[in-house]
Image (cartoon, rainbow, N blue to C red; front, side):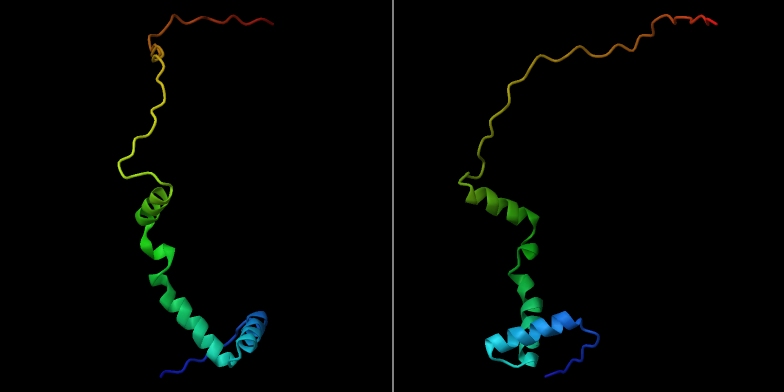
Length: 97
C-alpha cells in the first residue's frame, strides 16, 4: 500500500474527522482512508456520472408517462398582421421659440 501525507488541513476538518472516527470506533487514519475511498470510487454510482439524458429519462419514467406520450397542444390563435415596412412620408417639424 502507498502512503500519503496531507499538509495544511483546516482545523475544523481535522476536528470533524477525529469526531467521526471516534463515533465509528476507528482511528482517524482509518476514517480518512474510508472518506477518500468513498469520494474516489463513488462517482461510478453518482447521478453526475449517469449523464443528463439518463436523468431526464428516469424522471419521465418515474412520473408514470410512457415513452412516446402525447403532450397537450395549446390552442392556436389567428396570426397577427405582419408589420409594414413601407415608408410613410416624413413629417417636418417646425421649431418654435
